[in-house]
Length: 249
Image (cartoon, rainbow, N blue to C red; front, side):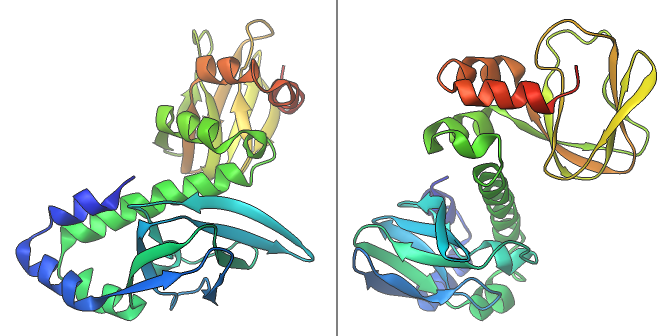
């Protein structure tokens, strides 16, 4: 998502605050940015270049996501707690970005502009899903382009306790990536298994017994289009094999 166009559409007063609060900074290709990720990490709007977000897993470094022009880096912990491995920022190319102090954004910009808060909440939510999918054992094997295609075609859903995600006899039923909550899977009206955060549930192929998916508690899930997953499996045989191993049949 290119935030530059969205920010230009904000009220004039907010625009003036943005202009006063931002400082243009540059980083050289190969440079580690001077701060990790925390509630006080500066918020950076990239004008040129690419910044990688990497997870520090012991002695191993794993790239989670690459941010480019028009994207905001450091936004996620501003709006919600972070519960991931230690994360750092790395300039993949020469970078020029507009840097905002996190306190300035939190105390001056967001409280005075509901539109900006909604925009940042939506953007942070989509970034959370990006990072979750990149680190997922199923979707982490996909290219970034394919992950973005899958995420763009998927739809976040909220299910109340006792609500059906999937009823028996559903045709071309989707799969669900559980973001937060618990889901019970019934086959032929008998309890088969229970799924929780980060797990994928649903029916990937036709056949088998009647399946029902029931929210055991209030559950947030990402509805994944089965047809697109099947299409991606043509390019990623490992994805197809892993899905078949994970899903109930």
